[in-house]
Length: 536
Image (cartoon, rainbow, N blue to C red; front, side, top):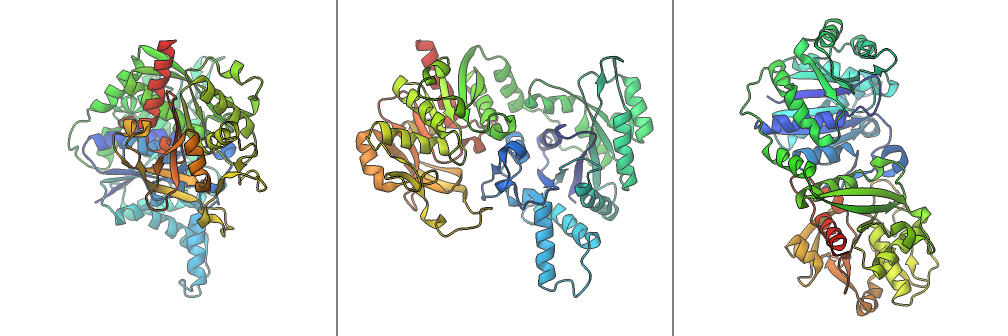
């Protein structure tokens, strides 16, 4: 029988429920169990696809084309598995499903209410992943913080679910904060006690407490927390701040969280967790002797989470190559023709990040021009690739007015235009070209050397595309289309001739990079950056 683990949070947001859930899942996976994780978000949006990156961070796209919460990226990176549409559920999707059923008459005229109809739909979604594959453990992370009004239906659904399944089949791990007061020179447990009290008021007794802290928790404090929160002492788990999120699974192994969970769910371990690949990755990461400086030039750099997968991909690639990658984020609005060289000269490689809209694109174009003319290793992703096409068209192919139809609908040379399938679409949410698509790679290309295969599959999220009417002209001038979708002949990869490393990808390679399988394009950029630095 599948066992269910619910991860809730209290006291404060951004405590790392997703990292904890992924770390616990990693330990259970390494013990030989089939494990998956899902995220339930309390906002009314159907999905994060239309949310501002400044407010919600990056929108993570799965293989099947779902626009999801960025925590699913952590799930995939830690477990080295693919998630799907079913792994991320929002309140908007819950209500949409219930209201659709009401319109169909499915409730036989009954009054539709939060309890039981919304909570029943939530409970149904808790188990939905088991319909496609039987799991030993399904870990469910509940977004938000206990006490939030919008979280109440989820808390009630968890209470009912545990009552239905029994405590031996479903448990709650509650993540809280133990603040350190420097004036008093001690950790304070009262916020944790109040957070647990809120859960108890809603009928849920947490089984495990994970205490985020910046200081070691002494045993007497653990005993106090256990006593006042009604949990066993071994179920008070210390989650101390770490230099890297990739240290957390090993910390949780040391705290024996997996054994505590197995004991409470009355399951015997299949094998001892060794985490050999994980430890090797961490060793490579921490013992790298070489170092490169990479600039990420983008429109949303003020928020670290807006380009989360890109930053993590550099960590994976650096560990694989034995190179420490120091990444600086630069807002593209700060770069122009007169200062590009001054700002970018110190970097060994540059990535121009994805985005939408006209704001700050001049800085991206000037950055790409600098990379092209100064032979600086360059990787452009999605909009970054499109800006590379525009820069080349303007400055090499002499199409001075070249632009993207997204930014200038009156441009004389729309080298980037709206995809044919997108022209009659008016709804914005979930209607882009999303998910995994095939790409055929030219065997005489840098991309082929990096991927070591002529057929790949990568994830997309865009409406605009390379305009094939300009393919022959731009190719004749030296910008090669080395990756093509075999079904509709859309350009997926462009490369520059006679350049050490210049690649633009219409897809998002960062979405498929993991510690155990770093992405070839990121590894290529890091290596090219080192070669440039070493030669200089």
